[in-house]
Image (cartoon, rainbow, N blue to C red; front, side, top):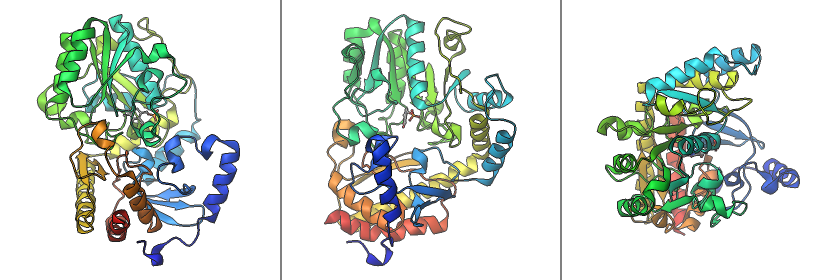
Length: 439
Ligand code: PLP
């Protein structure tokens, strides 16, 4: 079903690099979902990126719908971000002392979200790991509640029934996690109030925290039922447990105020702790956790919960994040919303025309396409989709110059650099890809 006129001339250079990579790196990649395991074929080795476009080692161009799995809100190599980063690099790349960009980025995060204090780390995984330690330290309890299909990074306690790469590879949990860590985690079906009430009824006095993705994006996009996040916040409060909203993916992406901007800001509830990453690092390794001042003061050096990092608050990374957030104005989010809507509508139109069962779900500017005809409310329903149809769709799009996430369980990300030309490249590729998915 692929239009041969648009099939890339060659992928020989990516194939040669993938062979070299596999000889020195497990699976040839440094994060599993990059490897194309779920869709087959050779991942493209990217040599440069600009705006909405990626260029691979063979010189093929692709419209990018991965956007580094979220961070590149403004598109690649934004000139103002590049200039800020170049300036920071020229002043030296790491001092191991406090710096002004850290203060400014923390102020920006405090201004946009309900957190009162912020601590920087270098990855989303570190952010959730540290938030959980803080929750345990502050409550004196051990148990953690999470939802099946929510991914919070590769933290021992949080890998149970995680989405994203874990779902893509159909790994039941993972080996290497001690039974004692797994035993401290209660995994519940998403959007299931009864299950939450039952877990708190049975274990309420031992639960340190409940962690959830504000608007889950790691099993595909599965929005909370109306009021579900508020219900979680309330249930935690009633049992003396902390409510942690993981906004590593949605933070400064779903809306200007993250996923919280879609419900909390309107309904008037506030998480005890939040985690951030991706967009706030502007394409550099930077992440953060934050929350109420009284809770955050349990952290060293004020309190007894230890947490630290050689490169935490790195001046280049925080400068990139700050430049990105300052450019991410309400107008930018409005444009991202419009772009996402145009792409969602076109996907629906062409999959419908080819009679491919599908469901498009979104959370602000984030969305994903399930190859299943029913609404998806939890991980069990996400797992019902036709992943073979997705693989055919994915490869047709790739051959026509559109780089989608190489897994049916991932959100699609747009950027402010997705202009008319990028959008029409996507739309022009859809008819053949829909036919390929139907085959
Ligand atoms: N939390 C969420 C919601 C995520 O989407 C991710 C990564 O995709 C993480 C945590 C982990 O972040 P990192 O990959 O930076 O460790």
